[in-house]
Every structure is written in structure tokens, then in C-alpha cells.
Length: 113
Image 1 (spheres, rainbow, N blue to C red):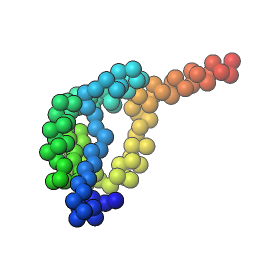
Image 2: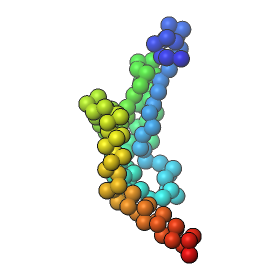
Image 3: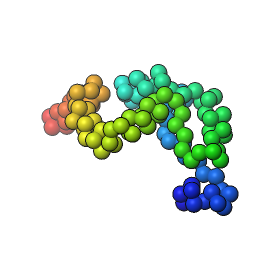
Image 4: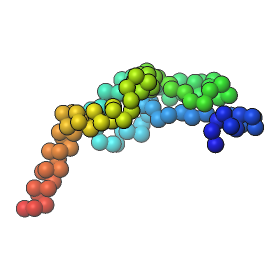
């Protein structure tokens, strides 16, 4: 139910979008250059409880940290569909994509031989 509708029932709803924070979730994941880049702007887990509890009852959506705030502002300036389209065009130039392509080609060559 939308937050504006349930507020009259004295129900406070709060949404926290996914964000990059310092945690151990990605420790054993594949290394991704873009994720490593954004980790330098990550929010400390110690900052989250205060920000979340301070927002409940005052707002329905909260962006915490410079990455989330920057992307929110960017989405106000540039249409999300356009940004996704541009990412699909330029992603082939990123090192992560090139590495994955090379790994898939090598894997395919091994299967066919």
C-alpha cells in the first residue's frame, strides 16, 4: 500500500533503496571493478541505524550516502530509460565486460575442442 494512503491509519512505512555499504557480503564474490569503485563512497553500517530511525515517520524514501544521493539527482536530470540505453551501448568498453567476454570465449573454446 502506498505510504500516503496508510498514513491516515497511523502506519508509517519507510523504504530504504539498496546501497553500497561496508559489509562482508561481497567478500567471496567475483571482483567487479565498478563495485570496487563505488565502495570508496560506501556508507558505514554504523551510520545506517541512526539514519533509518531518524527517517521513520518523517519520510517514505531515504537515500543515504553520496552514491545514492548522486544517482537520485542524476535520475531527476536524465531519464532512467535513456541512461539504461546509454549503459547498454557503452558497457562493452568497461574492463569488467571485456574480462567476462574473454572468459566466455575461452570457456566456449574449451567446450568445442
